Amino acid sequence: MAEQETALSDKQKKEIAKWFLLNAPAGEIQYVAKDLKSVLKDDGVYDEAASEAFPVYNKSHMICLEMPGRFGDVLVTQYGELGDNEYLDPKTTQVAIVDHVKQVCKEVRPATDEELPSPYIEEYRCALEAEMLKYVGEAYPKGSFSVYCVNGKDVEGPGSDFELVVVISAARLSPQNFCNGSWRSIWNIEFRDDVQVLELKGKFQVGAHYFEEGNVQLDAKHECRDSTMFQSPDDSAIAIESVIRHHETEYLASLEASYLNLPDTTFKDLRRKLPVTRTLFPWHGTSQFSLTREIAKELGIGK
Image (cartoon, rainbow, N blue to C red):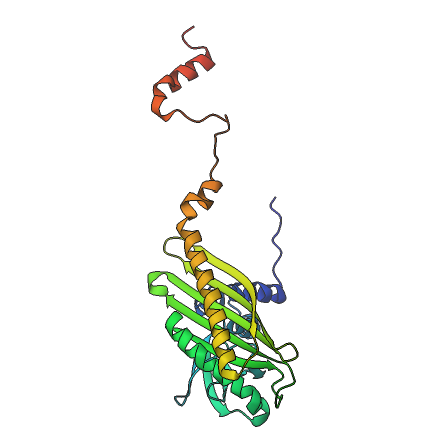
């Protein structure tokens, strides 16, 4: 007699639904959400799971949303998060109020003085923003970026440390062709005034999903470090952009090289080098094998 199946509790259903939502590939969470809703057949459980999962997903994927009123786009990131569903866009000094589940920007308000960096910090931030605008326009034509101050935003002049963060988010979504992909990079830049050094820490994440008659996903991650001199705002910005360009270009080149060599390296290693007999099969001399002769010998036929 088969064991009786135990029904899942609402909490278990919610956690399973959250897992599927959080692990949706770039640009596909709405498709996953639609299917989950039809499978769950419980709006209460679905709404609770969606309200918890969507904000985490949107921030981790650093999605880009259009702000109403022709203010441009805003990146939804943890670095620009001000409060419940509010995200700062440093370029326009506007705060976007976001509906996470619908993935839209509902309204916009001006940022207050308390939410913005001091004029001294803003000089460094704006100079870096100008350099990154040129770089991202060249390297990621459909990408977006933001430069935030995450530490020391109230510093008024030389003598204190502060930290900026550059985030770059680019996605190419083509569900009609069964493929989606994304690039995300985060650069933490510590301005260390005492030793006149800028310390950079980079984190990259590349994702791709091909699902035409199958399901193949790429999730590649990489981290790096570098440093440069603490200089004037313009010179520091140029140096930082150069470091970022170098490391991202180098990583993309290594990715391309590794996948070009995939058939001759990784795929070969996945195959058994020899059969269980530890002897190569003689493809050019198969006449020495006879299935009927081997069967007859085993069964004692013809003796």
